[in-house]
Image (cartoon, rainbow, N blue to C red; front, side, top):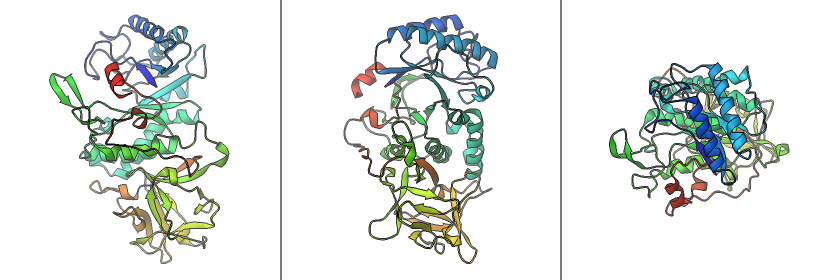
Length: 421
């Protein structure tokens, strides 16, 4: 499925705060010409069924940005697209490089149509400079997720579809700032069950910012556009390619899965004993998080229990003790903590073999040099059945784009689509 996106008015690399192409009325951004262009594109693809949506403008920004002109022109653009092509979704971006939709909380767009409006969000590690390196990851994750919920995530609870139409990292895995951000980001996307598109598929560019053959380290593909740059990245995001709760899944059978963002896996029961390990989220049995703060396997009369630090976590039948109660601690709200009989606090963790263990809680605050990723877990509401068919990612064959992206597939070069579809 393809989304048409109006990225820039003047061709070039996007985007700069003062590039003259960021907001209505800028030297390179004529609103009337923009609406004419939207109308022509919507008309051109009317009846092309795999074109499912149009995004009206990428990353509004700059000194001229203001809320009144946002409503004035985005509503005009939306109506123009709807009139020319009534069968596609219409996606609206916010202000400040697509990070701020907070004004929708107070004033909703006034349009002649309904049930087809989507809002979009962009979120990268570099959005906050190098703050993921210079700050404690738990504190940084708590701060940025709180900001994102206030500026855009609230739309989910208000009943609007919210699409993360751009996120991405240096896929080589060597950028600490990106790595820390990604763990936090994946936890939030899983919790809210958001749809998304990753930047970017491309491995390189003919020409970018004066450089011929520029190597795109955020690219799924290698420089040659054939090899996969980092197959482990695809494995991590595979759990998020299917919805946890909607569409088409029953809301009457909601349960929890325990998601581990740094691996993209979930906690599963081992077949041979009441021990636990990480595995595909599609294989997860349903968990219940009870009012008394126990994590129980539904229908099994078993609950998650901690033992002394450095030992494996296990399933047990005596669920009233302190070592069976689990609370989310730290500002990230992704440490699952329990108290042992002697009063010692431990956190859920994984070892090098993906066995679920308990250890002393680490990196809870202040220390910026410590990475808590092995101890980050997210309790995710889900209505997936435990026996759903698993996605099979074959990294030795031609890339099947349907397995790389979420519901939307954002391609802006038709030759690429022809090659890989």
